[in-house]
Amino acid sequence: MIVNIRRLVNIFLVNIFPLNLVFKKFVNLVKFLIASKFKTGSINYLPISMDIEPTTGCNFRCTMCQVSLPDFAAKNMDIETFKKVIDDNRQLLKIKLQGMGETLVQRQIFDMINYAKSYGIVTETTTNGSLFNRKNIELLKANKVSKITVSIDGATKSTFESIRVDSNFDTVIEGVSLLIEQCNKNLIRPQISAWCVLQKSNYHEIFKVFDLCRKIGFDDLTFQIQLSSWGQDYWVDKNKSMQINFNAEQVQEDFEKIRNLGKKNNFNVRIFEENALNFNKQCQWPFRSSYVTVDGSVVPCAPISDPKVVTMGNIKEMSYEKIWKSKTYDQLRENIRENNLDEYCKDCYREYR
Ligand SMILES: C[S@@+](CC[C@H](N)C(=O)[O-])C[C@H]1O[C@@H](n2cnc3c(N)ncnc32)[C@H](O)[C@@H]1O
Ligand code: SF4
Image (cartoon, rainbow, N blue to C red; front, side, top):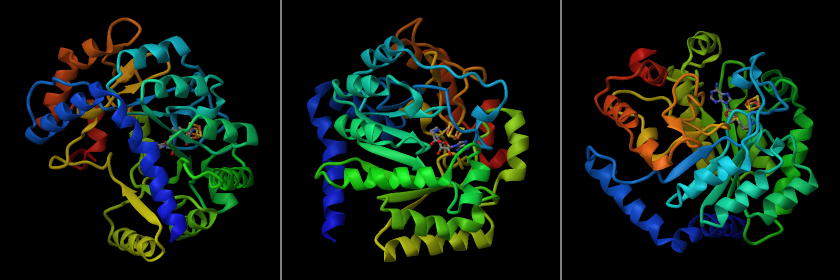
């Protein structure tokens, strides 16, 4: 009980405190909330959050990830590009350092975190958990990252390693356990979350993943139920053989059971449905956030994340505000509002699956 209260206080302090720092953020947030409530036509605010891709380099080759394609290029975002994103966006409340690649292989990741923090922006990251050595753990703690999400796509060595190709299950579990142990020594510490992308090849372990994550000491666990197809036909086809049918009665019953188990065990479990949309539950990405790739391209969302599929402009060539308020971005928003979807959006919508 005391441990849980402490965790909640830590998460609150680390996540909420920087909001007080900047008036600009407050004004932008109010404008955003008003626009969301009244669904106003024009966009008179800037995004409140952003995903920034620090690298496309990775030490794994996960079966469902674009990184596993043979011609996928490994690049790092340079610090100047990162600074330009932040300089153009001081209204941001939060950034997620995450993209097609493994965050902790980017050597300048802590410079990036520090730069964002100096503008009162809360930082979080998602990682494959393979590089939690003592040095990286100390740096994550020292730089006060607010949330660290670790991908846990299986509860057994064989399932985990068959999805997360080139991984070592034991290294990840040992690394995460060390991270949690070290972070628990401090009163204020990051939220440490587990993320599991459910697919046919790991669905049978859904309850085991729950047990494992709880036992290791994660703060919470999210199950993502739909694979992204990155706006590409190749992945739409490939995903057909990997994707679970989350509308099936048995699956819905399992979700209910796992939510109840979470409540009973005081362990927060969430089913992530942000890319499982329909005409009544429309995409929110272009109204709230953007995804900036390693080379500075602004892509509408993380489920696409590929500037070859669609790009709204490049941060190195013009101001972010100009891109965000451009006719192209506005057209995308209008298409979403009217359910007149662009080709690359369709795979997120039930009506087109
Ligand atoms: C692309 S990875 C980048 C961060 C880090 N390398 C990792 O694996 O956590 C971010 C998240 O996307 C998930 N992911 C990969 N391919 C996906 C797909 N096709 N659909 C949905 N999520 C996917 C990963 O499992 C991971 O949780
Ligand atoms: S570790 Fe992350 S970025 Fe690397 S291949 Fe797997 S999902 Fe993709």
